[in-house]
Image (cartoon, rainbow, N blue to C red; front, side, top):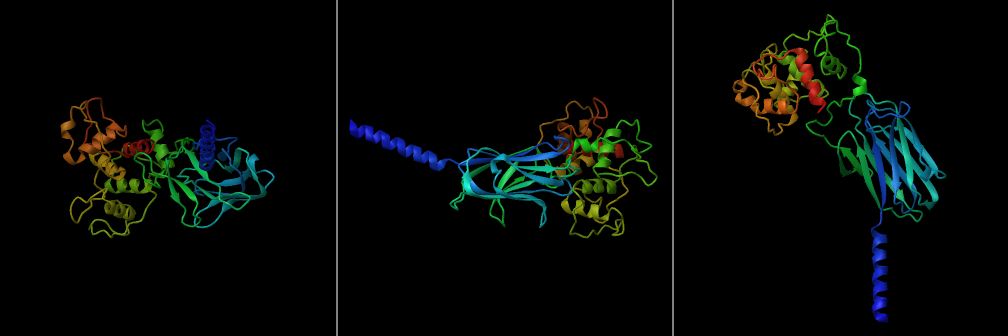
Amino acid sequence: MRWKVKRVVSIAIALMLLVTVSHAAEVTVTIPEQKELLDGKYIVSVDISENTGFASLQLELFYNENTLTCEKVIAGEVVKGMLADFNPKATGERTSAILSVAGISNTTENGNLATFVFEKPKKGNPEIEFVLVEMMSADGKKVDCKIKVTDNYGDFEEEKDSQTGGNVWKPSAGGNKKPGEIVIHEDELKIEVTFKDVSGHWASEYITQAVKLGIVSGMPDGTFAPDREMTRAEAATILWNMAKKPSAEVELDFTDVQKTDWYYKAVAWAFEKGYIKGVSDNEFDPSGKIPREQAMTILYRYAGEGKTTEALEKFEDKEKVSEFALSAMCWAVQNNIVEGVSETEIAPRMSVTRAQMATIMVRYLKQ
């Protein structure tokens, strides 16, 4: 009986040791919505729970300085009393905010480790990345720690930082979005219409938002020309603007597109990527009009050609949709990017206007 009791006690002790070994602290990084402000400031907080004890710590938060401006880094209550060093705008290959703390003994408190205070975000992708560079105990051992990132800009994928070896959590592209693509910030889009021919137009809100995002611009005379038909060159340029004007490696052989043309870089990029094609082997037709089905096909290719269950059954003219554009039109309708010109007509061959194209792009970005 004593042997059994001793065995039970031994097993219990062994289990307790296993629990102790597997126990790890958890660091939570909270990245709120861009419009969630506190006293006009955008706050990213880092907290710790299940703290097993640490004496030194270094956190680094990388960000896009064109979108975010870090004003200060505040040490949390957990590390108060430790020696601390801050840098809200460390420069290197990328801008980052850093907190480093050190003490002579372990702290086992739970709560806030750091608060990163930013100005109200500007338009664009914040490109936030969190790195736990170091967490060490007083005896110089690395502290076992789990990281949890709560973010509303996208999902996060765990990687290893090539320089520090720390864990990095990078936002991956969500939905149909492309990495680096424009991210809509609703508060930044609430501006007044400035084009004299847009006020009272059905698409005025979308036009204003598209202009604010830098996707499309007005005409030289101060108008927007919302009802003018969109050209192929303009369509390529809008897509290029939305992708933040990437460079192309190809040189175009089209006889009707010259390097001096304002749309050359956009057309070269869109053609290289396969989003838009020429009307023949040697002609692009930059001034040609874009039918609705072609506009949706260009955007569909750019978005990655996702699957769709839409069948366009409610539209009586669905048979007029070209075979090459069918999946694209179904995808666009299913995702509320495009609507019918009436309850029963999708009008695939009708030319897209500048107002309609601005609306389509803003709807795509708001998915």
